[in-house]
Each structure stands twice: as C-alpha cells, then as structure tokens.
Image 1 (tube, rainbow, N blue to C red):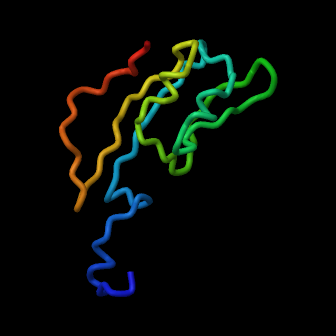
Image 2 (cartoon, rainbow, N blue to C red):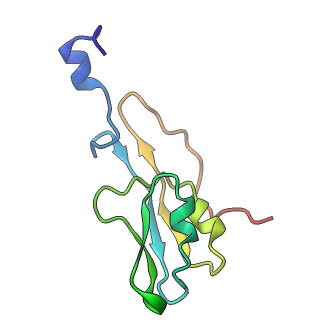
Length: 109
C-alpha cells in the first residue's frame, strides 16, 4: 500500500466498515438447537458461538461485528435444522454482488 495516494487509501473498501459491506445474518431456533457446537466449529467467519452450560447450551450469533458470509455451512451441518440464513452478504463500492436470486437453504445429499 506504499504506492497509493492518501485519496486512494480513503476509497479502498474494508470489511469492517458497514458502508462497504452488509454481512450475512442467521437465525437460530432455540427450541430445536441442542447446543452441540458443530455449527460454531464449521463457521469460517467465526460468527457463531455457544452460550450456556449443560443442557442450556445454545448457538448464538456474535453480537459485535459477526463476520457471517452467509455461506450456509452452519445450516447444512445442523442435524436439528435449527439454523437458517436470513440475509446474504453484499458488497458495495468497487465490489459488485452478482444477482444470485433468492436466498435458499443448503443442499443435502
């Protein structure tokens, strides 16, 4: 980044600026969730964590800047079907999000 001007540095989009990216969002059905933690392990953005003790463990989305990419890995691996993605990841400025149609759940094989 040493070869770009200050004006160019100000225009470079960053992942932690809400003006440049809209992150994904998930919803966890707490009645179905058994707190196994598989979703938290598989999440590439570390957007999910497990809260609680014993039988009260539940999956939650990180409250402060969850880096959810809406990849649906968590929904695909959840045996209880307790997670669904409600919002996809969208980029602005230099990055263009290709119209990918409606947000669907993961395929199961």
